Image (cartoon, rainbow, N blue to C red; front, side):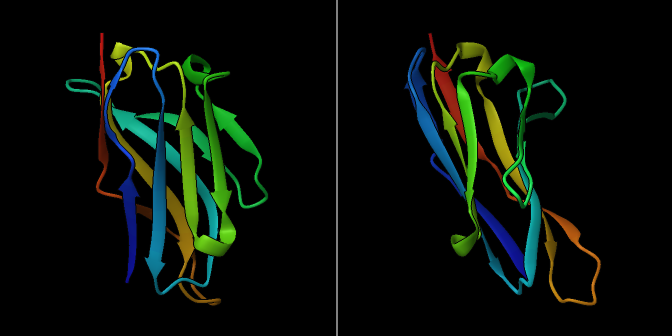
Amino acid sequence: QVQLVESGGGLVQAGGSLRLSCAASGSIFSIGAMGWYRQAPGKQRELVAGITSGSTTNYADSVKGRFTISRDNAKNTVYLQMNSLKPEETAVYYCDAFIRRKPTMDPGNYWGQGTQVTVSS
């Protein structure tokens, strides 16, 4: 099996920073693209940032210049550095990854359980 476990969420004041981590573990042959999504109450889940296996990144327009996604392939971990946080960014943040468990298997899309980020005004 494969697990994604997020950490680093919490309560922060507006303008503050948090760093989220997401570690993949289990039966893993290779990891492709990884990403961070968020879902605020009553809203749809949205992409925040993504990173390919070659470390090409993309960001939602709303976070460009403030958030940075990175990965450590040796640790099967993806990070999201969030600076200048805003109250409207309060949400549950999820990581996802495309993981190939065996060389002959197609990659599957796996999700973490989410970590709460609360930004107070």
